[in-house]
Structure formats: C-alpha cells, structure tokens
Image (tube, rainbow, N blue to C red; front, side):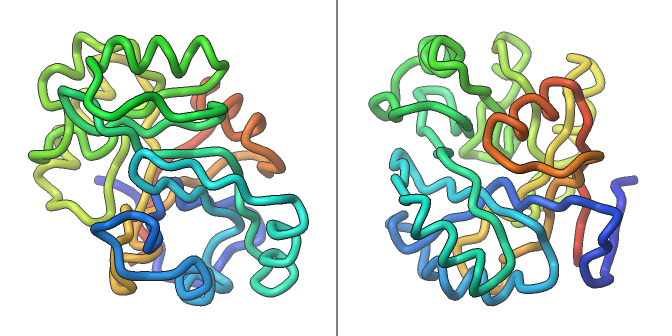
Length: 208
C-alpha cells in the first residue's frame, strides 16, 4: 500500500507536488495563485508542468510567490506529449516538439541534463507497456487517476528498479495536492530535485 497522510505539513518532511497544471494548459482551469493558495501549509514546493510549455519565471517572481505562500517553485519543468504517451521532464532548457517518438524525447531530455519521468503510465494518455522499453529515470504515482493504474505503475517500478514519485496532476482545484513526493532532504533547486530522484531518495505520498 502507498503511504497516506491527511495531516498538515510535517517539518521533518520535504514535500513537493511534481505535477501541477495551470490555465496555460488548455485542459486546466486554475491559476497558479489558486493552486498555491490551496496548497498553503501542505507542501514545501511545486513544479509547474503545463503541457509542452515551460514557464520562464524570473527569480523575482518566484521569490514573490514564496513570500506570499511559503511554497517554492522549482523550475524548469514540463509535461511532454510524445507519440507513445506523456513524459514529465525536469531541468531542461526547452521542450521538444510534441508527439515525437518517446525514445527521441528522452534522449533529448538526458542530453540537456534533465530527467524523464513516466506520467500516469498505465492510463490511456500514458506510455503503457512501452514503459519497459524506455530509459526513464522514475515512474509517477498519480493523484488524479484510478488506483488500478497506480498499482500497475508501482509494479513497473519494482520490475525496472526505478524510483516512484508522486504528483497530483491537478487540472481543477479538487485535484490539487492529492498526491505529492516526499524527499529525505530539503530541495532548494531543480538540480537538487534531480539528484535526489536519481538517488531514489523519494517516495509518493497521498495527502488525501
């Protein structure tokens, strides 16, 4: 069973929602402010993973959000539509074109010193069993998808000996903060996040 925690933020944990959409994604209806307000006191940080679009938030903008909500925004990050299914990328300078072959997309991510994570791999928008042919860095447990898909993702991670991460995949407010990633150490940058995931120093946790 995956860990659940319905309590407020524990200062001994460092919690990051790794899969957040804003109204920059055509399928989402919430602003970044609405998301952060909803997560107030629940997580330490987020990554904004709009579809095929990387936000170039300035340090001043990131600091202003932190001052207001006490939640860090780790940049850059994006959800990429590939020919085989969705891939989350962290730490890349620009997103590849949508619907390229997943192998090529992951090669681009790695050549840009980023990491590639299979998003909701076993739902209809995921890569499915093709996951076993991919050089991914981790597999997502998704807070907005049915549990049967998450169990298949957990099985794949075990077979492939890959870390599991958690993300809410929020498109509307009720989805915000459903599932997040717990890190063993504080994360101060996207580079910290990448290193901790590569080391497997992370685990998914359901907040509700």
